[in-house]
Length: 213
Image (cartoon, rainbow, N blue to C red; front, side, top):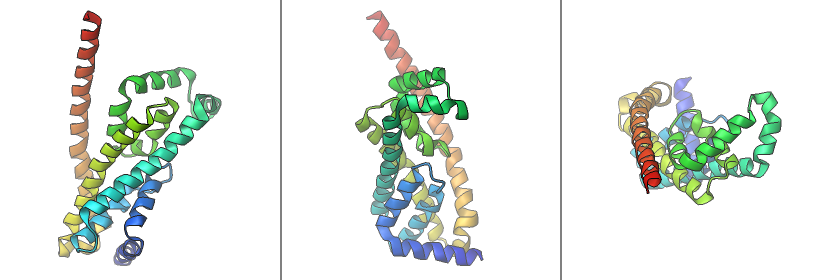
């Protein structure tokens, strides 16, 4: 059954090609439950087989991520905080919490969007508070794209690495992809934590210099 599923998935990617990667990653970046782990590693596998180009696959993944994130961002920006306040009694969103979110994004929106694109669950939803806080659209696209670039590159490389190992082809999605994705997360999370610490130190130092000036 696993072999049939792997073969079926790879055939779908062969049929869909590069446009399919864009569409699937756009869906993944919305609130719909389609994990990027089921999109980029199979594409990387086909890269290893010489059927797709690595840089084009990566560009399609980033483009799709940006498009899906922009849809969420635009919806949240259009609906505005009043809508989410009305919705708050059902999903435990408070006015105080929204105020805090808007202040946070005003000061730290870029790093939040960048890091959020590489964290499970968070990457699907990070566009919503950005939209509510009316983060600058061009900067939202920039940092969404940078975060997506890192994450898509990791997943595509995982697929390529597995595709180059013929003895584990039939286990690519069920076992190997999950294991290597987990290792990638263990590597990425400490790096993100270090980035956050450096950013916090830099921001406090800049604020301190501003007060002294």
